[in-house]
Image (tube, rainbow, N blue to C red):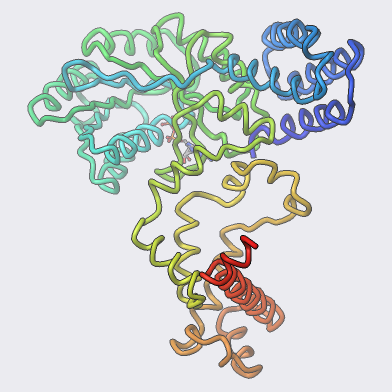
Length: 443
Ligand code: GDP
């Protein structure tokens, strides 16, 4: 997961500070030396680190910190606020044209994730009840047009394409007219990338921008490339007046330097963060939430938003009723697992829970898709009756389940025991929360 190294190091610096009742100036300086090293190791731009540490020092050496009863917490709070400011302070929202369509031009080097992000952004807009149109203006990369058309089909979003013999400027211009004629309120233009920045590319992008006056020019950069991503952003911004940056591949093993430096170096805000290859792996970028994740304080707001977007409210209500009445079956368990999967990979969900990274043993819990699939296979090997009633699962039946699902008998036993424990816990819980239980708790 991105930022893991940085996050662990910062948290260990701060846990040392929190352990102290009073802080001296030396304590603060020592901590800041470690913060500085952690940021440099995370590949944050050298000058950005210097300014950042200076700002934190100035505030942390102030009287109220050194005299506070909880000085460590005050320092964490200062770092949190400064990290947030570094990434732009508040969320920078997507522009909206007074008169639709809002035109968004996507730019970026080859392989950064431009076409994928174009699809993700269109999906996000579609979910907000907009009617986006995609335009395929990358006529150079073989299959780029096809890639966009496939995404469009998958998402049921129209794609405007004129093949690879018409100039990208003409494609963009005609796509705009098409969007107006068809009442599309957003037009997203996927432009050509190159392996490196070159004059021709920049000229072409400038011409497209001139032809359609975009409301947004979003540069897609690969967070895995660290400071290179920042340099690319700087070069593009000098020529194109970008309105925002999209950071991709934040699900990977990036150290986080790009996310922390882009805004400070280029002045251009990060508008979205992409955290996976799937079409729903795009999030609006919230500096304060990202700072909170880096400091291990979680990001409940994003988690709640994801849950609201992905989870069926009626199903959730029905599930709650079943839980309360302890009617939870293996079928419900499968259903729940499907719902949770919609929130994204589990390790990403865990990162959004405050302090989850520090929970004992949590680091080793790799509840990955494969493991979920194995558990699902056990449930799917059960008969209808068995799924409703775990008591039917005799040793011979368990043997059959193991063979049917490709697990060992021990795996099957372990899973059934966990499920049983969970049910027992729910029964206790619901009796505690029932009318009698509530009274008991009051007393
Ligand atoms: P383009 O050349 O800039 O249009 O790049 P593509 O959209 O074709 O993406 C290049 C590769 O990066 C593809 O394999 C994508 O699936 C992958 N990719 C894009 N965004 C992400 C992301 O956020 N996370 C991960 N892990 N992969 C991504």
